[in-house]
Length: 564
Image (cartoon, rainbow, N blue to C red; front, side, top):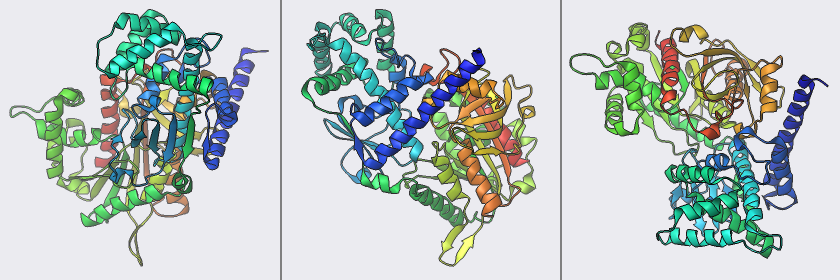
């Protein structure tokens, strides 16, 4: 049996595990609730353990808790969720107007509400991918809780000394009393099945993480609820509100979001202008167009690359505010999101920008006459399936009243995003030639107006080829990823939105005729991680300042195409 055959077989087994996960999650969603340690919950847990996603590290090791994976999920789940036995996924149901304080995770845009000591509500308004993402994280959390329980109880089901000491430490932390941290780390290392050195390092990382409780607190409450379920039959439960089950897949949030954008365009008198849509972050387009003019010194213009690095630092809030104020006075309009889609939007009227004050690379290609007709819509990143919902609704004609449909003159759709790279390193750039939707026959080839030539001599390695749109970044393992890289797919990377965007664009341009068939498409991604390389997965941390250059090189390449 060849190594290639073994790898292919493992990839096939992993893909089967992913499908079982999604089928089980969909079934439980329709049913309305389940217990993580019940029969249905065990089915999800077993499939995740068989898959062994790269992002969850040592998930399948029964002795060692996966610390980096825990940090990863707790930065994406609401603070304090480890203390809750009951978790309910809801739609936007009016809690934003209640007295419950909204809890926002550090690295996911979702509103969450702590209802009482034991119950957490998590608002799901970004489509099915959002729900599956949360359920996968919760399943991993419960798997790690079982490991902690196994270390906390002896063979007779009695609590070990280390557990009792951890309980005392957590009480002292809550009462803001001092405790022996070295002793606490020693007990914590036993409960996690990790070395003292690993545990001490993890405690420090958790303490420095934004909107995440201490590792002492997390380990105690995960283990505590697991012990209570084991010894006292106090079950944990995940449930879904009937409103959420009714609204999923109906484009309710995307419709409101898109209508709001078109209404603003009409109010600004821009609905009949040439429209260029950009899916990106909320700072790179704004800074590329306005920062040089807003911050230029009297004697000379600042170096744009150094300027963007400076603006990326949190310490430069004053400069960022200055750029924003300048932009708002010179053609930029911010549209606050009230739809629940959690996608912010900027509208930029290029006719109000002085092209002489643009950075050199943009200034030399800017066509002053044609830019008088152009408008840029910048939309923040969508999440998975939400990309189809929002782009599909945005490209539809605007119903200004019951009898009138206004078709927008969409000239280009530009997608910049973060993605995992399969052959390369963090910070490299990927130019897709097609999007292959994992686990389906949906493959989207297209003519990408961006190419490797656009990044020549920029000091950044660039890769061109098909990219995989995955069902979830937390569900990928090395067997699947090596298959996509080494097989005839020859994929260069993986992300979560490309196929969904392209599905909407092709439907609008080739089937519905909502926009012109010759709409220009530009896709480019920068590598936020390499899931095939140890220590370079998403769980290892973000790019930091290293992501600034590829972000702005892609932004400038997109803007050169729009402005020229």
